[in-house]
Image 1: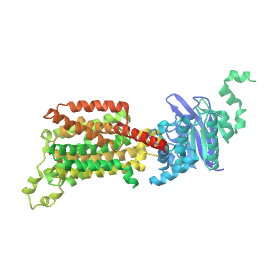
Image 2: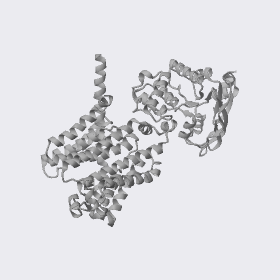
Image 3: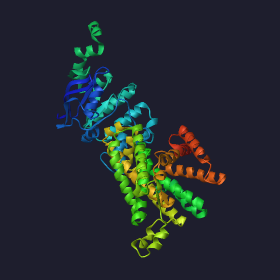
Image 4: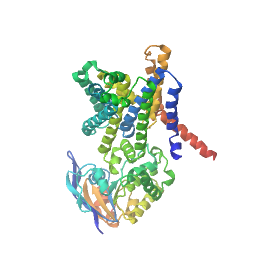
Length: 244
Length: 338
């Protein structure tokens, strides 16, 4: 499997606060890599560094062998990396279809072409029936669907999902899991930040664990669940000792 | 046929703008309609940058004034037809908009709005002190008839038919209407195209716009430049019609605010908004002048202000927001009936 994204020794400081320290890992083609860790571990900061929202203090990001460190977010999107947001950001005054068309306009100047591309993605994400609803009046699950659909419309090779399952119920989580697997089959790579372990373990090919800004573990899902460091990070030393 | 259906409202309005001036033979009414068209035109311009792209400008008088001054100076000093003056004014406005906003678009929200306000105020001060453009006295435009009789055989005399002659109200009114229609079509086409989608995405969220490959600064600059061009054209028509300009007439905040208020009342982010807002503003003006005599009692401004408060509190999308709501509920009822 060819390597798609590689980050090398990423450090991000905000003043004295070290949000990420010396984090390195890679994402291959046709792979779902998950980024997990307790609250405040620096997952979203890392996302922002990769996707160009702010440059890392030091370290490098490579996409398909090209150094993309310090490029702006829209340049990075044009290269083939599209992200979604932890706090879901629907374009409120636009309909579902228009939301997705806005993404599709990256590859075409024609309204008709964008509409055709959007129709296909709406079908794939199960939004066709709701295409005329305004963004502001959608339920949370549909807002998240729209967010993924809009990102897909830019035809990324790497899709970065920031906690897209938070706040969803069991069936809705299942829907998103299935969508992730389907996207992988279609040839995409995914980098997923997630808190919900029962959702993340079955779909991930590899898992990277962050704690207090540092990478503490990386491996297959089954390796991660048995990793001492990871259990400590999640439960704390005391409960880790008691559980033995 | 689809186009007819989608632009039914525009066609009804066009019919009214042609029909009313022909039916009502009153200079007063004709004047009001000309003002409606001029302010609606600049309202459309303001709507592009603020209604669609979401960047509040409180300084559109800057571009309006540039248009008014450029065409007037070219006409008065160099005897160049206002049709060329209008394009020149538009280009100067575009250049100014580009230079000023290239850096100012780093500001967001209120700070950007304050910046735009400063630009207009600075121009107002410059033009009120600048001797060559009349300083505090301003420039009174020579009637075109006088220009022609002065030099019947000159180049100017030969292109007089191209001039914007106000002696007859109706031809001037219909010329303004034609240019307004062009502006309206351009704005409608832009709204429905890729650029319109990108503007709205930027308005809703900078972050999202960037995440789907949009360069916000580039598209905001495009919006501002197109907007400045149209505002300058509006300024030319104003100067030609009012026949006198000075810095206090074309550059002050009160002028910028008319563009803002008519659009907000009519419907922010809607191509019909500026038209409806301008019609209400000037209809009130005319009505109050008829009722109280003289130059009006200011009552029209009180009523207009109250209307804005009322409308924006209940429907942020202005009067067009109400129209949309009624349309949707009618459509819903129709569907249920089927």
